[in-house]
Length: 365
Image 1 (cartoon, rainbow, N blue to C red):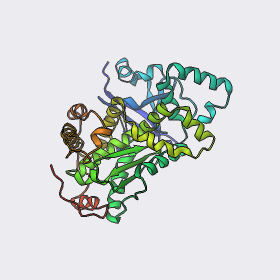
Image 2: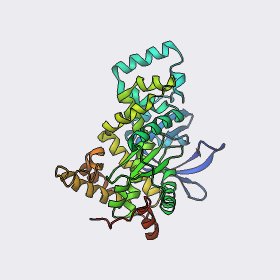
Image 3: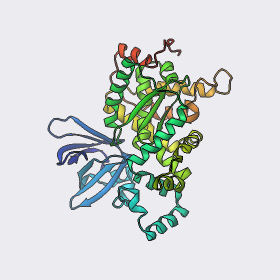
Image 4: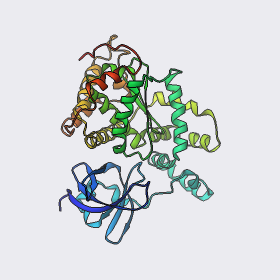
């Protein structure tokens, strides 16, 4: 039986009570959920984000990683071909509790966790990272951003800020995070961007200055939102700092700022980058923004990555260093990105380019 098709189910957004009837389209890369009556888009869930909540007779309840929404889908949708695309559904049991405090409340449970960590730390670290309460994650994110920006303030030119907020609001509902994000621009000349824990995304002025068009900025922002939606930064920190960070949080330690220098030394794995790229494609498509901007941005970063050893290239871009394998990722994205509309008007693009209150040069190809 084919892994694609259309099914009917019920959807709860995790905020309001009650279910709504939806149409579920199983595509090549994930689920597209739309209202059954109006056909209005509801959510896009890439296959790699799907998680099984539980099964009842004739149906399965699914969620997406980082989302509080629930989708009740017919059992007929979970065909062998579908499960091949989402192998985690074959083996996943009910999710563990939402708060880490429940995981450490008993000595026996703690002992079991420690024993498991000894043999399979990366997988266990990812599990713990997903269960850290949002307010704890936001504390870590704020500490990291404070360290990263080294006292520099965010760019707050009014019109540019309005445009950035509008772009973020257009992309955020499709990113699968389930909580508000904070997007800011830092007045640094380097071409770079990063996503901190707690849904904080920082774009550098140099990235906006060097972008050829608004769709490139939208593509990078969607990619960083992909990291946020999958909680990649939290998972990466947990893998490297482990129980030291958990203990600091549980005990109210104020040394979280020490995570800032650690975060500077870490880079995402190819797995995390590929995941964020796939999520960006789905987010851009759902927001009806042309995904070619993300590909063209990667093409230029690939060229600069090759020239990075030259003195002229140093200081121009850090993006290729903090987001590795640009050529490989561009080649993977080119066949699957969707065509869509513009990210913003020409006037709004100029306003965004002036968000730091500087007179920018025309971008160089």
